[in-house]
Image (cartoon, rainbow, N blue to C red; front, side, top):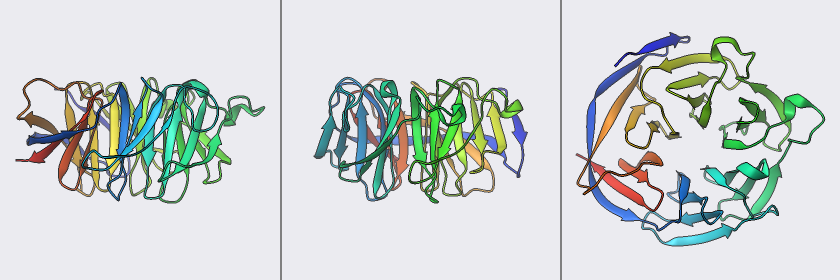
Length: 281
């Protein structure tokens, strides 16, 4: 496996031996899940592009609330491709409605960010694929129409955009999803690369030649990146970014992976129909 790396601010990347996880249980029943997020309290939010819904469940699989259905009014969706949550807020990338909808933790609507029709080109985004919020309250949106990241403050006011075609070696090509660390660095999967920006939009690292990823998640100190077949995990508190491939044991057939998380020492793996839970061996 060939690995090449651009380094700024002492970011080191290695590929470590595989880590095994044993199947424990499964929860949920979805039409076609597109993403999920586990907040610090253990509530799980799942976006379902078959029903255009967001489903909140607990770690036992009990449904807490469902909202949505196809539409363009508030709390309705047209292909909700990604969901993100902290302890109090939930953000949904409502792709075909060209907006980010924000809810409280109980999925009550707060407000939306929609700038595709704005007069100022720098503020616009369309067909958003992902949205996250830093611990300073800044909102970062992955704008697939203009291939860049657009940053807003906690009230939805535009701050800047970065990663566009004129961003040199940190210009994004085919970004799919983003995540934010506790240090407020932004991690973006872009084909077979993970591109890293600081909170001000400065490129600080690029990892290439690992796998072509479809999902990236960060919760607490754990980073997971995955595609339909493989999962890699890393502890961001480590002095070097050491990616470990995950081996899933105890399942009868291969899982088509949508996304994955490390939470409370367990590995949660989302397929399009349910969530599989694994324990570290």
